[in-house]
Length: 317
Image 1 (cartoon, rainbow, N blue to C red):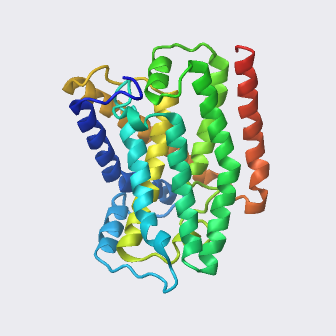
Image 2: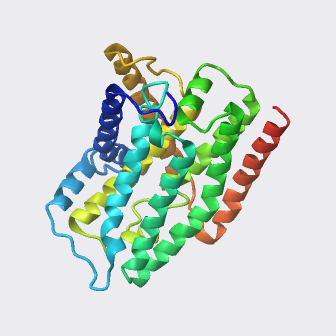
């Protein structure tokens, strides 16, 4: 399916259902991460469904905003959810092509991720809260350090395959069209590192850090608005995990819209997501915290590996 080709009704339905399921499963993914954290810390902790209860409770409460907050403060929760749903609709999660190719270009997806971070950080500044402003500054700084690595890694893969269409990239790698295998492997490692940070994991973000700087931009949110923010942040974790799987682990997908193929591909996808979140949870809770002022020293080697992948691509490796 061409990126500019209008998808048929079947593909549109699949894209919508796919996005809705991601939205429904986002609290389950974050709840699973909390369960892993509790087990590693040798405590009982909340149940895997606790995030559903928290969001349901917040949705029944009134949203209160600072007196000096502006328009950005109110629309930010919706921007978080909508941008992630647009990416989720386009990801070739259970099929070999993108079900919604209009937003299935990796450049578009990178911009949507940037919009997510921009509004998330800007809302903290718009709230006129000093604490939220510090958190926003931290979020933007982290984005400046991480996004070039992510962009370079994905662009290297796109250049290797010869297209920026996410569906074509996934299909090509799934069918072993690895013209530059070493380049793709290095880009995959760097992309996994960058997306690990995008998921908000330690040592780059503190576990349960509402009282720290990680969630500084959402300090002033409450009620249903806070529920939407939590849903958007959880949805981002699920989306970026599936973005990595769609590009670098693209096997086990349906070749058509048949029920049997989609069902088996969905089971395989759930298994892959379970493994990804399990590994991310184990790494997150077995690493020491890093001071924010030292994060660039951790990220810079990953940038060098991304540059090395680009050099390997130039030499045809």
